[in-house]
Amino acid sequence: MNYKDKLDELRRQDLLRSVRDRDCPAGRTIKIGGRDLLNFSSNDYLGLASNHAIIEAAQNALIDFGHGAGASRLLSGGTTLHATLQIRTAAFKGTEKALLFNSGYAANTGAIPALTDAHTAIFSDELNHASIVDGCRLSAATERHIYKHNDLNHLEALLSKSQRVNKLIVTESIFSMDGDVADICNLNMLCARFGAALYIDDAHATGVIGGGRGALAHFNIVPQNHIIQMGTYSKALGSVGGFAAAEKQVIDYLCNTARTLIYSTALPASAVAASIAAIDYIAAHPELIVKLRDNIATCRKLLIARGFPVTLDETPIIPVMFSTSAETLTMSARLLAQGIYAPAIRPPTVKAPRIRISISAFHERGDVTHLVNALYEAAR
Ligand SMILES: Cc1ncc(COP(=O)(O)O)c(C=O)c1O
Image (cartoon, rainbow, N blue to C red):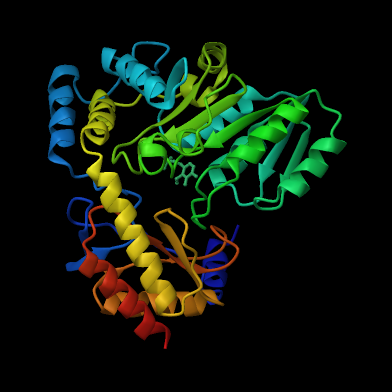
């Protein structure tokens, strides 16, 4: 394979990417290439990634349990902290049990293939995250349907046509690149009508909506046996790792069959301790979610006032669309010149290029005003 030609082609299409590492903790400002920049690119929605109580919990676990886990959970990789986090996560999500994975990506690519077999039909929203897409690709399911984004009429038509007894509907709750919210109530009703299971990726909803508990709490839906809630500790909880939460049999089955759990070394205890501390911190500090909600509302209203076509969704992900990747890169560079870090998101991550603004509780009102003014000036 000629990688040079392939890289040149990506460059020609304005799709070449490179890693930009920071030289400081993750937070409101980050230092990249020697410059302090206001950070609008982070999924650390509550600013917990650099929280002192959480760092202290991780430090203590590092001393008590050491650094590396040494083996997979099914051997000796887990600790009593792993068991505690599972119990705390199940309580947080209102389910009988929960199971840890090493990341949200590992949760989706492990759980979806494990929950499905050749007799299953999968129904997946067209904007679902790459980890869900990969999970579906790894599944043995012989029927895989992609329904139009949030289009429940399309989904219903596909469900009606399927002869499969086992059906799994898979959706994100807050969509990671568009920031809109899936219609979980009506999806759940379709599940009841067609005897389908519902797999909800709550990666961006955990810690954000439903008092932090995610989409089911947001929509006042009581967790039921046909619902699997997947999530990650890596976004609003400021830590690392993923989970699946569901009824006991589902979790026990995942524990026996999910390859990303079985064939991968467990998370270090320090990361697990940080996730426990983050769940505690959210419960003790409800004002964090209130501040996040205020920042989201301020940013969305200011953008609308400046003529940007954004919605008033209560989610921290705000896409500002541009027509080409080149234009999006130019906008991002102009923001950078104003001390704002908001990278361009381009294909293949998304079909339509955009600047994806991520709002956090760590932002101050002045940060948001500065961002919106800078975007307005850049777009003129
Ligand atoms: C919707 C969604 N699911 C899963 C993941 C993967 O989570 P993690 O970053 O913990 O691997 C992400 C994050 O990129 C995501 O946006």
